[in-house]
Length: 238
Image 1: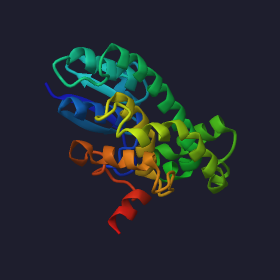
Image 2: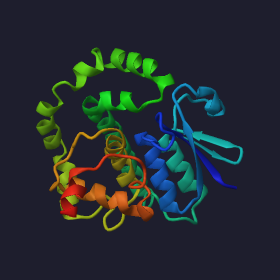
Image 3: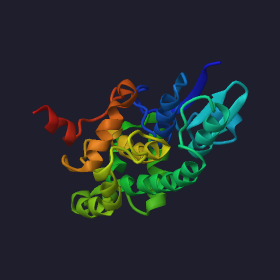
């Protein structure tokens, strides 16, 4: 039976931009599992009510409804053991939980750079609630939140030093091939690419090169999604 994935979409149904949903889209491609992607908006909570959650990703496998990206990844690993492993074994699963948490923190960090760009792309029905809920969360307007993003960019890039050092020495966090740890960290960067022209990474950053490799993975699954050109890609075409 074909799996179904509820995936957060903007006003354009093809612009699916959730960092958490992209973790699972990459994980499904990694395992070679076909899936029907269902565009979902913030106001469509009734559509995923059977999951007992109000957020996506939500995966439907027959009569099973599984929510939360980490729970879905574990479900896929346990339910389809004949497929390529997402974690690389029990130790890798434990380490992947760390990367999942680091990816969550990265989403919060990146939001301060792209919040207003997200607002511009969400569906009209979602905009008022999105603005109100996010501004309550950060304690300021979205315009104020991103106003000095150029000045904060250098510090953000410095904070990525541990990731950069790793990716300067190997192609993926998983080593020679990507694993779920890669997808957990890739999700936030791809989210930014989907909804914002703001360049978070320098063109010569090893993290940008890693992102490029993952954009090209699985026959360019992520690259084919609507998004903005990034400096590393532009420089390589010269």
